[in-house]
Image 1 (spheres, rainbow, N blue to C red):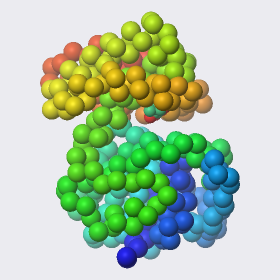
Image 2: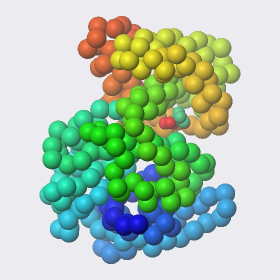
Image 3: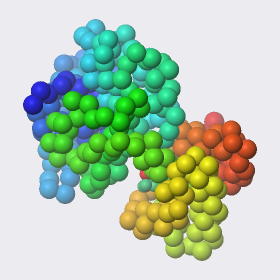
Image 4: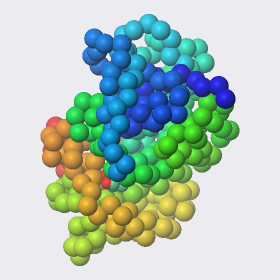
Length: 297
Ligand code: KPL
């Protein structure tokens, strides 16, 4: 099996998790960091089985060697700037895989890099950053990957099946991305506004009523976009995720509590923009979008 060399842009929890997994599966990879004076860095990953340290090549975007396979794992709002920083290094036939929260980014990448192959994915791996290059892999999930311009599985994907992270090729990646976005729209902004863990949304009757109202709006938009499966199951799916992740602080709540920018524009913002384009009222989602965007500025 030929192993392609991946460059990973974004050394947060997901980027480090994949760099560690690739090193474990002998897939060559290089971590691209904002600043580095060294040619290698030491990644520290902790999971239920113990701890592991791996040495990974690292460099900055400013270097000049060509990049053929690029995995982007930045925050949603950093994708554009990150792609601009590396554009000059992308090989003619480069493949760019965005493993980023939210929607609308693959289209943005395709506009910025019209001659590159764009892929996107979503992951439910539970990982968080404990410090620079130091992460905790708290729970296993699934990573679904698909193509923006094609449904066919590319040659580079086969080695990803050997990662210790479960990765699967998804022909309908748009529907999978939408489904994840729908769930995030119903959970993340509410936990951020009320300052509560995910489980609280299921336990508190007033909060659950808010979840249901959001789900009604999300279902209407899903139906109009042809995502009927999401429309039909959104309430049960959200209830299940709330139960399964009851102790989690959502990524948006973590961002708000750490006074970081949130990904609201790429989650609720994306849903509201699609609804507005179809003249569908989504007042509850709009209110949350405004509240969190105002707090963001
Ligand atoms: O994806 C999540 C997030 O926090 O962004 C959920 C599913 C809500 C888990 O916390």
